[in-house]
Amino acid sequence: MQEHLNNEQLTEYLTDPLASGGDTTIREHLAACAACRDEAGRLHSLLALYGEVTRAAGARPQAFWQWQRTTILTGLESRPVPRRLVWAAGVAMAALAATLLMETPPPAVPPAAADPDHALLVDVERSVRRQVPRALEPAALLTAELSEAADTTIKKQQTGKGERR
Amino acid sequence: METTLTRPKPLAAGADPSIALSPNAAAGITRGEFDEIVLAHQRRIYRVLLGLVRDTDAAGTLTQECFFRAYRNLKSFRGQSSIGTWLVRIAVNLAIDHARSRRNSFWRRMFGGSNREDVAATAEALPDPAASPEQQLGAREELQAVWSAVDQLPPRQRAVFLLRFAEEMTLEEIAQAMTLEVGTVKAHLSRALTAVRKRLKETGYHARTSEQ
Image 1: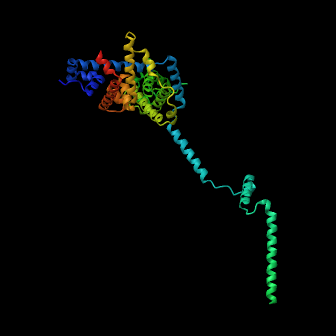
Image 2: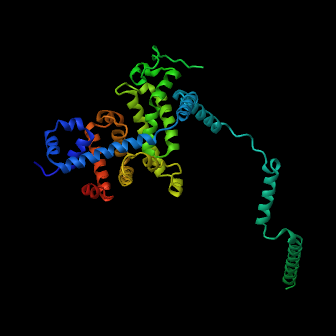
Image 3: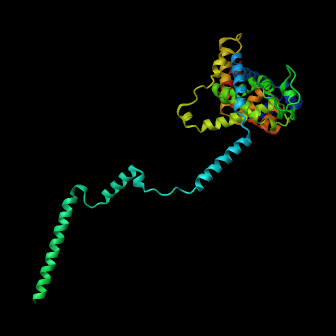
């Protein structure tokens, strides 16, 4: 006879006592070995207590079960969305999206005329690109004119000298 | 208003829906008949879910979802098992999905579960009141060790353990509910029991038993 039941045999005994009752090795060993009998008995009691506690933990008052039933029955009306309706909704959405994408764009409207914000943005962009700040524009213009006049005068003088020579 | 579909033969009053619902009739039943199924199975489904998710709010919500799914998928019920076993299968799958989503949840990792069922509170009342305080304390510690070991098991092993020892389902019923072979169910149980025994040894269970 083996010294003690191995884990598989003990599991067999605890999980399927009817089947293991037919296993002569287990039956004979338990009859002869007090330690294994004690171990199997204690585990059996403990597992029974585990089951009892688990079942007790799931106990709820009658009102809870009634509320659950009502919630479930109410939910049945809204929950079971037929699959074909889901598909139909999907196809409709896809068709709508395709239509919107394929639709020709409206004739272009000058943005500045249509949208004052856009006009403001264009104005800001122009200001940023400008080399001279708006406040200094008159001075810059005057400088440019003076510079141009000076250039013209120099050119005329150079031309006169050349003719005299 | 009762939505009558195509069910030919209504359930007799007081009949067990798990027996009366034939696979061919399952496709079309009235809401009243489905209510009888809810009435007959809601407690077990809730217990199974509570044992697996250990959260009272989640177990309630998942119980409802289990029945919604069952109602939506009645056509797929082929009658190869009882409707009770079929419902348990849906419940176990829901619990596994729930555990997966919770494991990945940022908020859960940050704050943990708020409605976690305190089984210890239930266990306080249960151990044999005739036993001495020392024996009661020992029984509670052992029970905690079992719960702790079961909590650490992979979801499928935990479900098999729960269905066997809390719901007292046969190995064949568990195999049907979990879509497993009976041999695989036994293997899961063996591993689960090994983990439980190991945990019990760590908590001094064997020391106590050898002293007695």
